[in-house]
Length: 137
Image 1 (cartoon, rainbow, N blue to C red):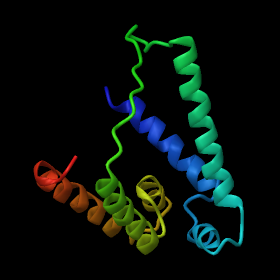
Image 2: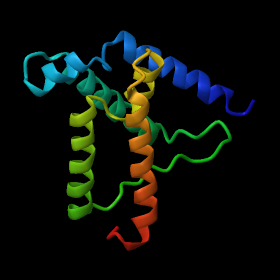
Image 3: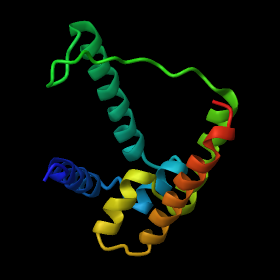
Image 4: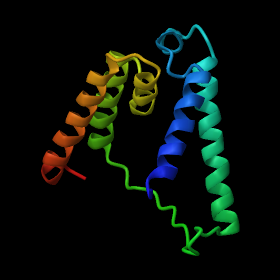
């Protein structure tokens, strides 16, 4: 019961991604070939909403539903970690045609081959957790 709200939000997120054609392999291919502004418009909109939201939180010092102060602290820049992690993420995106969020939407839309991509992503998370103490953070 406690996870129901997260399930409903995930379901809504998947429907939005599917209807906006963000999970379309052809849209992603268009983006990487600079043939369409569709994906860049969606990504740009997400960045704009994120900037606006964090600005509102900081300016009005908003609190959570439980009354706790929302702390927005940036993480220190890690040149090697960001370069290696970003490269692995981009490689996985290029190989599957989807980043982690849309993987579940694609599975829900009936593209069952993405089950293996989800398993691979989970394996990557497991490997990261295993290696995390040895990695420079």
